[in-house]
Amino acid sequence: MKKWFMLQYWRIQQSQSLISLIFWTSTLTLLIWPYISWRFDTTETILFLPTTYFGLVGIATSVVAMVLLVGLTYDVSLGLWRDHITVIQERNPFNTYKLNPTWGILIAQTNEILRRLAADDEEVQRHCRFIDRMLEWNAKEEIWARSMSSWKGILHDEDPFLFHLTEESRQRLDDAAADLEDF
Image (tube, rainbow, N blue to C red):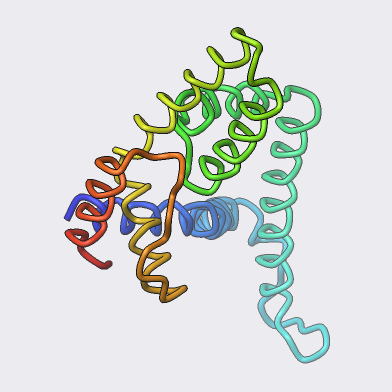
């Protein structure tokens, strides 16, 4: 239920910028029009259109141009979005401590190669054990269960084998994937 509401909220956010631009344009055009409408004779036409329309379109174009100018200034001169993106990246758990399953599989394969290449180096083996623990922990997350469910449903693979997990972790992941609701 929570994910459904978040999806609706995301949809609202995606349309917000366009709707906002339309509201800004129409509101400011209609607020400015009474101050300059006296300059346009309602009986005159250009290309069979009353000059009033050209006045309204001119105001609307000016408003959109001003909004774009502010956006350009914000982007190029101030660059505040860069810090915003940095904060977003820092708050994203998949950039800090979590792994999505695809990356987990690649890291597990690299870890196994490293383990075999440096079998006698204790520091490397210590690092490999850390990676094993990290992968085991990540396999308990819901995104791993969703991936397991997708692999079974899309690839029609009855047993996507994740060699880097213990038998207990694989079974727990398989059970969690079976219990998921499809959205």
